[in-house]
Image (cartoon, rainbow, N blue to C red; front, side):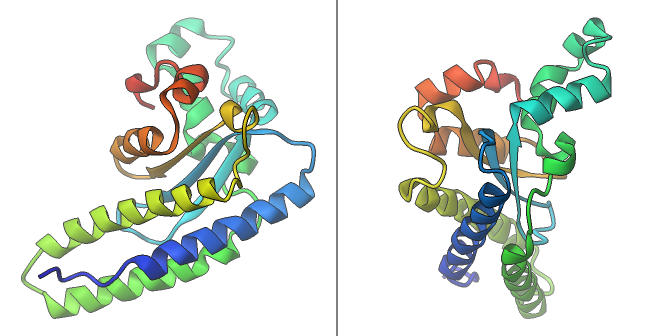
Length: 198
């Protein structure tokens, strides 16, 4: 029997939180077209964050980083991919809008962590299971948002990618979520070399 609680409340919190954030940023930026939407967490599962980036901000980040001035370095370190898709390098768009609607996710995850840590002090397996379930919950939340059309429909949806990620982890969740949340055609159009990772 699983030691974990039902993660449906966490999924619902994420859906509600992202919807609120998107509504606020679109109200503040009605003419901005975003090419990426990302739901993230940390390796220790310290809550969720939401990020969205647009091409103008991406270009500003490249200029600021000196990517155009050093093409050899840019190629060596895959900088065009990195600055385009890694939310941690999006400057003011890293945590876009008011993130307060996602605060409940932090409380739920920390409460679950503390409960499991007390219940199973000598068993480390529960954290790996909790991490996997949290990542699955993130993807499920984004799927539900996708079904509501919040990331756009038709041609508009084809011009952006939706995915999840972990700040201080590898890009396994990013790759998994890209394939789960976007058609092959959309990925190929927007991030043709995504298999190279971040």
